[in-house]
Image (cartoon, rainbow, N blue to C red; front, side, top):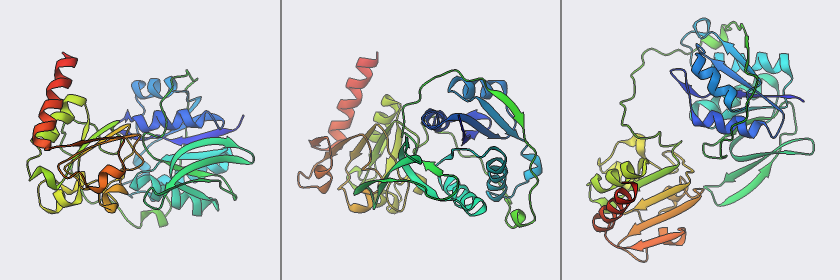
Length: 318
């Protein structure tokens, strides 16, 4: 059975849920092999093995230096040459898509981004994509080289299957071309206690209808263990940071549940969330375009509706 390389998405050595999803998808295509760039801890090794990683390729990050994504693409290119994998899976983040593009060039291969599903097919993996701002769903296949597929978070339910987790160290030197850009400073992101927006299973967003008061949105998000999002109107008004914007010019999310509160549903916002599995909207305007998209809609004032929902959620949790 051919290997399927999975670039591990981790923060400080802690494996993210997106990696578990990709390992689950990789098992449909072959034998999952995790590629871990960093210092592999026993906890990380156990986490990768728990979701089916048969091999764990480890790469010492120090020789790669602070040179952004190019060295990571070179690492994967080396492994593709050595292992001849059936596919390479990466997280469809901004960094992941750039690595995928560079890897495709280095290996003379086709690349698919923003996949929401991956399955085995005749002649190679078949990816399902949501394209043109989520208005069409298409199936795609790489026809040249090694299939390189960037997978969106929440595209699969992680399934635990014990893997061997055999660790194999790989040495890769950074080329001079890979040193063309480097990090000059790093500022840790302030912890909010909430899930990462693009990875969260539940997202509660607020828009112009909040009037700048995001407290009801945040309280419901905390009750649900959800991430907080915002529309462009709310962000442009200075009510919430730009890093929380959901939309075509913000972040694209695909959670199990998306709640749009006080958001009219302009196409720019819809492009960032309409692949969500279940969509709920709260809006005072019964003619708001968002209601054309939702599974459940509530016509009402979010400042009244959300506190009532939060109270019910907290009572049921208690």
